[in-house]
Image (tube, rainbow, N blue to C red):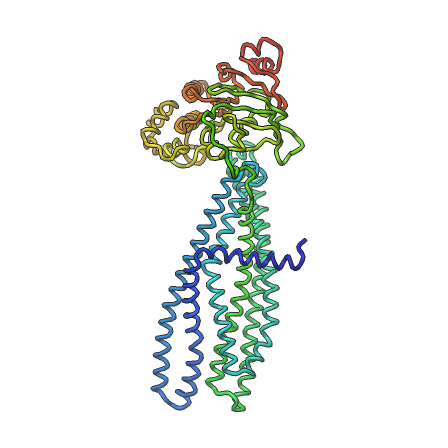
Length: 586
């Protein structure tokens, strides 16, 4: 639990974190602040002008002076409008720029975090939180920060001019302000805590609905539509109840601040009226004092409400900063080793691995395996044997907990991560396509590819014929996760993407397991083209996939239990023979 000094330091860090968003653009912020001071300063002039008009114009019957004051005020207000426009534009620019920078920083950092970080968090919740927190910051930095500064200028300027107009009345009015300010600060802290709880509840609800929509076929297949709707309904009702509770507190907050402001005005009218009656203050002076009191009360009420907004923004910034402060557990070393000239040689040397969420359960228990350049290795074994985990160690989606993985004779942890992954391509069992066009998806690993290069890769992947048959050809949109295409079509586009990337190491994860016979034949032919001259790790169960491999490596319980060719492994009773017999029986 935080100590009081730590809470103060934390609160200070929260506010400074909001200010830090605009610090790279200090020049524009200074200009906006100057416009703000001038605009607010003009707003503080008119009560004095009214005092002059009342005392010297109306009281003395000097209508010419009254006209001069009126025209001067019109000119001042026009000038104030210009400063207000300039202030609003520049502050809005700062808000939009700061939020744009923050979005880019957060997403740029997120996509570099390792897969294990996302395994511990729901993607929907992350997306909901980022969207919600950034929206809060956009309003605060772009609008409410400007309002806070303007009201601060008017509050300080108003109090100073009140003291000049009548020091005695000013002291009486300020007797109301400190307790009002303390009460508003306490309200602000409570509202901030409740707002954070509301944002967390809303993010949780968003995460749940994204998870459901991402698995809509499973939901419908198991007739869980009503159950998921009810579950989401409970979540949003929880959000609603929290929002209502927050609304009650905020309503009390606004009502109390307004009451305090008007009480101050009432006290001024009562005391000021008695001073006018005693001849100690002119009628114009009382009018000016009332106008300044109104300015101070409105500024104070606005500041106290804006304080809650600034605290919410600080909380939102803190949550986003937690993401930015997360140091990727997998990154390029500070002093990278020279990239090997022959990266196709892979070696697993005593490789052990356990997932961080289950450190006591070893998925790989000491793998020793040498893969020669251009060799095709088929990885087989029962479910949970560690096949996919083993291949994930090569591009460093995970790092070994003991032992090492070498590419080209160099420990992968010593290589530049981008260079390492640039020489590897993957074709998974369920390839992920993005919602853009077919051409964009094929060129995903090589963004500068020409149309001719894209089409050549598609031909080698047996995809050109069906893509050309689409009305929009390579401009056809694939839809989210490629839903507009069949499984075989998605697989061949993924293979075309790998061909165009021209990798030296290829990882195939059950690339044909979910296809029909016709699609499988086309995909197998495309894979044969893709695998030529490349070191290939193939995770497969089907005999058609593993028979042609240079070697078959059989894994069980995270260990290599058999190595050999198809016929060799069938010649003695072992794990591989039993797997083949089970498949033939099925």
